[in-house]
Length: 548
Image (cartoon, rainbow, N blue to C red):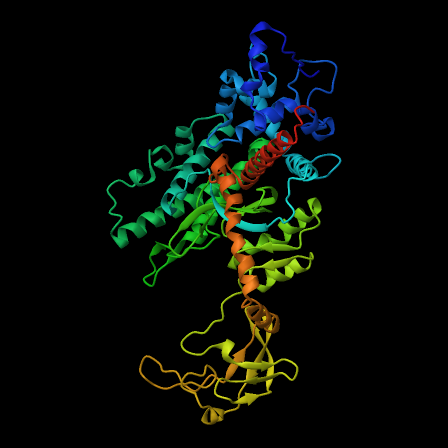
């Protein structure tokens, strides 16, 4: 299967060679003039075209260039990119594609994307990750970073591609899609499957339409409908699991996966109320299933008022140049700071001189600071605010960590402490003796000595306990450092990091273009690669390097 080789020799191809068609410093110009530099043979080792027999295969550099052009603009689907390559002279010039030759079809592009998701035989990393880091190294070698780069880490929501459904439709649509999969695997019709399973829900146009005149505002009627729906789901899943051995091996896993997701919805979303009726649980957790086609997507909060559904894109790069060094995509419920160590570790393999990273308050907790410090990086981020509650708080206690003595705001000291369990961690907890509240000058506000009242007005005994943070001493030192004007001034540069997020979202990273977390991360990496190559093109044009 030799590689297709094209030469722009025809009279109609002369327009593709005109310099004004591809202005210097643009991504299409870079893809045409520096293809040998960008697409070495080792980068796509294993792609079609190595054999001498068979039909001609598309060259990997042509397909890779088409993929980068697609992800350099927002909203282009795979089919849309192929259609544009057939009519856009700028794109054809970048691909070195003669007018008489049709561009690769959608199936070929899809196969190439699947190839890029596989592991590189030498690097033992996903091929797209290898390509992204190779191009980023090219940009670093060309001196794209200035003398004082500002490294920023940030995250932003990425909406999922799959349809978001409520609990009732998750169960109803899930059963109908399971029936369609089962019918295709058995070579029969959905109507016959509905007769075998004994439910007309499979042929209904909608879930609520199947229940007819049920008043969903009536608690008893709604509970009866939910009970019928849950029992139907449970019975159908049992039938599929019992007969799955009769299905071809390659058809079993999708069926069983859909069964697991349906049982997950029944278990997590339905519960009994105080009268024993089946109701939908009124709670929002990141683990709840929100989409059958995107089971890894999650509900999460961007802020107190903004609820998002899907994934979370994490980016680390230089806010000055706009160069992105590392990124990842996680389920939406993942904490922002959880990607601190993976992103910094990956970025330092490309640029070891990273010593400071700026982040918002989500990266100012002790675990994130310790993760960055383990890699030799200082995290510049606001520390967690002290929990003051009403009046005085823990930060108002004077603690001598050398002698392990705590003094309350009222001036009463204690050296009595022990380890207690707080959220699965052993933390030191100071204790004041009974009667010490009499010597406290501010016992009405002191957290260790003030009395609290129940709803009936009865006084409760003072708490007389002060549990510390596991890293209380370090946390207090960081809060003192944060008061320094020079550190606060440096942190103001973090707002420039919004440029990194903007460059990603304006090219399509706000919404996933395919199902699944792996596809979302692949899309984000393609967008970041197009961004870095655009910066590299501008750099090469500024240096006067017009050809590879």
